[in-house]
Amino acid sequence: MLKNRIILLVVSVVLVVLLFMLPKVVVKNDDQLAAGDSTSVQQIDPHGATPVTLQEAIARMRSGHGASTGEKSAIFADSLADLYWEAGKFDSAAWFANEAATFFNTMESWIKAGDSYYQAYTFSLDQLKQNELAESARQYFSMILKRNPGNLEVKTKMAMTYLSTANPMQGITLLREVLAEDPKNESALFNLGMLSIQSGQYDRAVERLKELIEVNPNHIQGQLLLGVAFMNKGNKKEAREQFEKVKQLDADPAVQATADSYLKDLK
Image (spheres, rainbow, N blue to C red):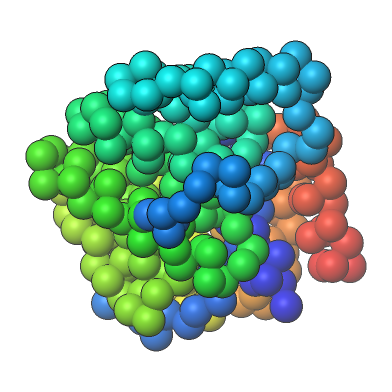
């Protein structure tokens, strides 16, 4: 089905790979990894092979980490979290970020650990592991929100971790709360639009995504998903126009290929 092509991604600073993949749950309406030895950390490499220089840096840091204790070990762990993040090995980044956060116990360390677990969650294809990563991310996000309830970015991420649970509506509720505080919040509008597509509420998806692109006409993901919503509604003309607009907005080959694949389906 078309909506299964929506692959959940982690948004990069400059360019997004457009598609989202949601945990397979149905939303009816719009109304820490387990502790263990660090050698058992499973590697995720969504970005391909790690450059040799980065591998060497990781090896040096792991050597130092293994030979140290206390604060020095935590400092090495924090550096390893950064290196594994750069390598795209987010579960390993989360492992070491968690170690550092446990020692330093600061807001900054909580944010790094929570974000690392969240990134690992979004890339995980294993349901059990996905649930564990989401739970670990929520633990840190809860700590952050308790200290700073106005952090809407964290609240939005936390909302998305509930979608792999038995209570996805809890995530929907959090997203609504974000919009109540900030009606133009792009992440909340996008995610609610995406969830509406996932649950077959295409009219609601169109509404949310139109709001999003009014706020930010250059939101490529939103423009793409609006086309998907039109397509699922059977509005082929609007869908075609939308995918053509996406191609005009971003010349990146991945974006072009994605839009072309949908345009091909419309023929």
